[in-house]
Length: 76
Image (spheres, rainbow, N blue to C red):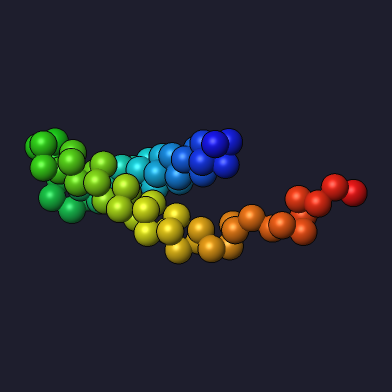
């Protein structure tokens, strides 16, 4: 159970990192490009969904490297 909560915490931190970086970049690029910030529900949903999808893919791809090591769990 502790492993699952730790894994969920890792996923949540990854999503927050991707969300804040995407939100800042989108804000800056919206101000430079069209000259206004798009605050429609579709744009705000995209701002949440895109980092969520990226976090899922990255988390699943790197999950193999975080496999439990039975030798490291042996008592010393």
